Image (cartoon, rainbow, N blue to C red):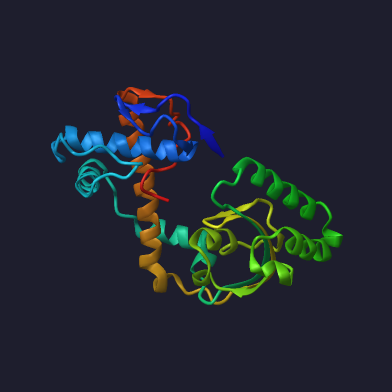
Length: 259
């Protein structure tokens, strides 16, 4: 949801946006986290004190490189053990399936310039609730909802997207559809770069799940990413505790740099 921020949010006196800017709470938190890291890089002598202030949330190339160097120095990241990798693989085997496909359909509520995000979300949630509350009639009602409400060309075909592989979808859409057992209308809206989706999984083809040894490095990389994200959240939390922060709540901040 977009918010009209009448007061300017700052980190140690550095403004994160213009007074008339419309920013989501999450965008504002992300800017605050990045600014904390940028200022810490300056304090550590990794970035010039006259580094230009971010413009519309975008930092300089030098600042980006300095933050990378700062994190490499500050974060202690142990290498995942073989046992940890095996446990992770056993708990998430389907994530590594080869040839996994789903047959799905959706109703897209597209985010377009000037759209009222709050009103759009209410429409999407009402559609989701309606389609989940009457499973017996879901087939006809889903197709009708897609034809009447969807902003996707697939609406003319009742929202049918056919058989999909993960590499054929936007990453955030694939994350919601693959590596899980759900069949039917998903219980939550799926968020993507295109908007809000009400999604029904009609069929699943699990594909083949390779043995652990075949995906050992991919599993290790997933655990490294988890460790990095946890360490980064903790580090930013420490920085925030030492900083003067105004008009932004970092308690709910997602990990900066990791999306």
